[in-house]
Image 1: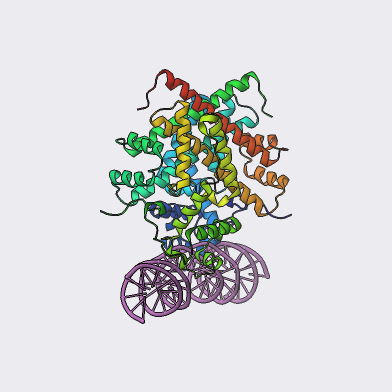
Image 2 (image 1 turned 90 degrees about the horizontal axis):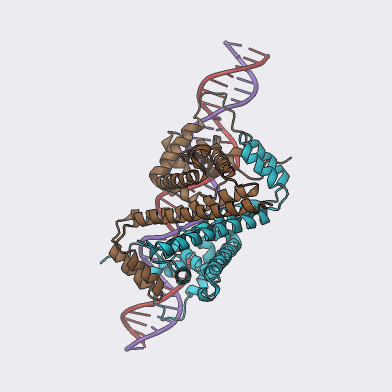
Length: 242
Length: 242
DNA sequence: ACGAATCTCGCACACTGTGCGAGGGGATTT
DNA sequence: AAATCCCCTCGCACAGTGTGCGAGATTCGT
């Protein structure tokens, strides 16, 4: 009867393009990505995109229903940049770890992605291929039934949750050069009622913020993988996977 | 010399209000929260907020530098709704679990929070108190030095990463009533090249989406806590905490 | 009562996404 | 060759956004 209820570019037939004239979807996506990388999510407007394509402001609306669909296309394009080993060869821990690090790197390289993570439906071919591969990996690891999904969701959630604040941090830092000493002082003023938080300030004193974030990411990643592995051993003895 | 480099409401003196006339910051935050809860993040505009306060469109700008500061205030107010036990009594696993569930519930009740998670600096009193408490909890668990921070970051990242897509899902579902059968069909059409993904469709067949999400959340949470616990035991034998 | 501080708010600016409908131009049919 | 059709472009307009500015109102300290 009615059309699909989730609205997504991927859930409707694209405009047939038997014609060779006119712009192609690839061309549009490429321009969109350039604009996003150069000026960020706020820097992308339909008028600017039109200008970049030497087209009118509303010409893109022939190829795309609305701006969200455009973002879906860009979103999936970036999913395609994430690289994975062959799960059957690398093993699930290695595969998971590569996935996590690769996804983190890709998002840090395209910071506008962070605002889209989890917010846009990930139904594009690249996202689906990724999900399929990760499922294969977790299945091969020994997870069964819905546990495959749960494990994958857990890992992805961790990466999302780590990277989003990291991007935010990176952006407020990149805005203007920041004196870490002065930053610590202002922060200390605000946190003066919380001695435990102040402790952290002195501990993190000398380490460059970048490496701290990297160590932090690895710490959490190892924890998550350890946790999944524990679950794996436990369910081998008494599987339930309802 | 210059002011603080991170721009946040909490890093500057509030306008002194020796005066009793005029609106108060609490009043403004309350109205903001009502608007956000009623109409979502997109539903909040300075003009609407002014109208709700029976004030002009730009009157709020006396109390707040810009819209982001307003959101920071609302953001921290919600952090205040998260409830925690006393870590020293409950133990760190119980404390962490309560934190995770409570934060999830609070965000699902205020879906506009999801778009703000990790994007806004969390320097408000409620967020700081929360962070301080969680640090106490992890310290008491046996973590030392920066590991306290890492453990806390890991847990928080997991919750963020789980809840953000959950809210997105909840919102596209809530928009209009969706026939799960038809949704599965459209999804099957799009994922037809990925047999592993299709498997999942049949497995998740009959379970209500809500309970699946709840099980999924618990699955991941237990995994994360197990992983942290493993780390804890390991570092007890050979602590490094650089 | 006077000056100063605090607070309100109308106007204006630049900008956003996008509905609409008139038109151009190439391919296909008559 | 002419007419028709479909793909595609795009100018205009609308309703909205955040917020700088500066004139005015209100209330305080003296």
